[in-house]
Image 1 (cartoon, rainbow, N blue to C red):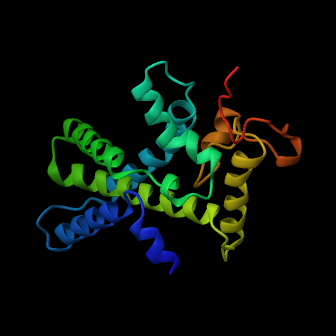
Image 2: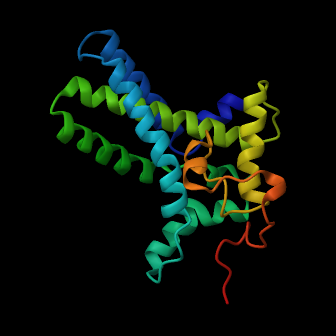
Image 3: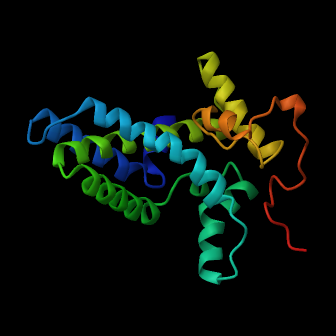
Length: 200
């Protein structure tokens, strides 16, 4: 039931189809698979996870009404109602152009279809894992591993203790480097975790 709910929301069905198609292409040897490329693609995603969350999704409200609606749908509203599954996942209309842009960048850099698709596979697998970890953080489910339980609490601190800290969702690495990591007891409680940018 939990897994079925996950794969039906947001861009998750599309991500799953793309990942299966890529695995099929690699398995049939229709295109060369590069494990190193997949690992690099995943690392690229996990690095961008932090920067996207902190600098794009938490960017101040735009004065452009269209961009402001986009900001609200992509993240502001998720902070208002963190358990709303319709706001939890990336929508397909955002994931598709980002995937195309990512593939185009990889193609320009590598000039090789096998490397491009291996990098893309790693990034999409990273995104799919991100969506799963984010999902588990916001539903009434206790992860089985100590790390799973900790990373769930870690993300919920961002939502319920201080939204200016703990931007990593799957791991705290860039938070530590960028100094947005705190022990929860050392962090100030914010009054704006739900409404990120209250109107004056």
